[in-house]
Length: 557
Image 1: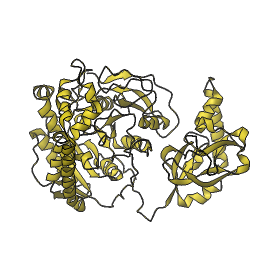
Image 2 (image 1 turned 120 degrees about the vertical axis):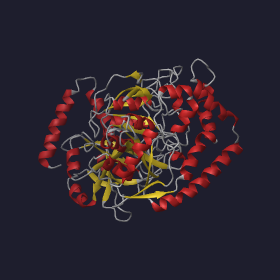
Image 3 (image 1 turned 135 degrees about the vertical axis):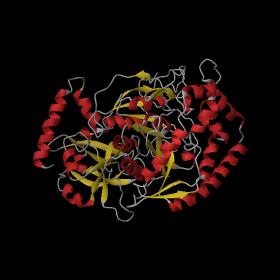
């Protein structure tokens, strides 16, 4: 079984919330120094930099270990459409692993990594999870950057995460999320409050499931009652929308993405070519007809969301064998998307979790779905379903927020000496981003090395790229006490981020912004510190870190 397409030398883990966790990356997502093949061996151009989602994870302390196999060009739900070899379920050599994120799911299920990145356009972040007994989170569209990802359907693609438990998957997800102003499909999305009690919708009609799947599904319906009130609803519009993905104009989007790569008979999977080539003949009229039909179906699904908080469905109707896929590669694959294809079309988020095992011992997966912005709710319910402690992701209701966002750029960053003081005040890391372009960073005086930010006066030019910052969420009740630890020439003041939002941050007074101490060119405090270390043994910096951390804790900084 070919799980890996390439392996990489494991770099030392950075300090951070994911410190030391090892992860794999589906080989349609860029990893610096490695070709991104998308399952096509002809693609040999080495990626110059990490995709933003990979970069965010690395900066949070996780370590990339390699690139994983996939259905070529992320077109498939089976895991067999790859010139690098077919993947199989970890629980049966005779059954498919699911795709297209096949290698990523298998690497997690076999314990080779702690978590792995996949993508999900039609279900590729959930079907392999179901077929390997693990967890798969498909975020709301636009929450996780898709820059640096070889597109399948650009308007629908999502980067997903696999793990063996919801807690680990969620920890990775929290670092993956962040608005990317350079991604045209990125968006800011407020999370819906998590209700005290939840209503779970289930289909009001018989589902066309294989007998072994049907037995597991019946048991899952009983287990769902532990999550809240179970209510039967009409899901026909959801299932009809799922049929549009490959029978409607979205095939043209796949053709646009990689149709020019389909000419080489030796390199392209014949089933991928057979499916995608029809996209070349679709017209603009077909596209608008498809969009109109989708809008009609989406409007009809609104009635369901007025009744329930989440929708519970099987991930797939069955678990086919390799032989069944070989005998009918298009038909069997198409059936696997019955309950997943509509998710991105209807702008839903989803989490796949292991359900009751089938009578034959093969894994069975269920998925919880919610409208965009329901990611926190799904994570909480997914954790409860799996018997894990609640994740405590309930956000405060609108108008009742009791936290403030704080941007830190230096000694309070994750792994830096004053970070324990920030955490001791109840702060939690939200994201890593950059300031607006017209900020400069200066080395300022104090009991330990630290930077201060100053904004250029308007209308000065803004040639920079902004300063890297971490955004932390701090209880309002702790803000006053924390502010008393901030000594001159630093103060807390408004800082504009790259996405135009404004938060509190560490700014320095004008007299401390001395030209000879301008370190803006480094772009980030950690990069400045690294430049001071040079090629020397990094253990010295860790000894200094340990010293200052102990001082900070003793003095309550």
